[in-house]
Length: 95
Image 1 (tube, rainbow, N blue to C red):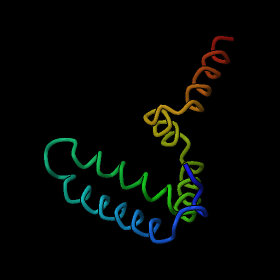
Image 2: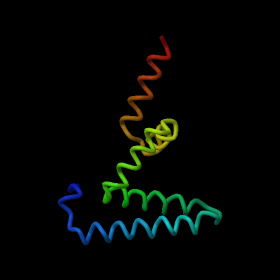
Image 3: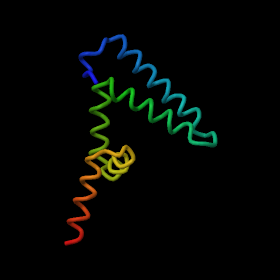
């Protein structure tokens, strides 16, 4: 995947706008029964975090401020770093 600086600016702005619309849609669908809002929220966050350096910095700060929430997010995304941390905690806890 190309880095942000290699993407066409119009494509980046369009993806940011689509991400914002998905977040708004998630807020509107949230009160309705069913998991529809969760998927819209996740898709919107992915688009925004891939196309905005400012959003990436803020997301990182939030994840550092609330490490428990960050751990849940990383586990939900099935990131390798979360699996390594979990295995390390198991080894250290067994001692």
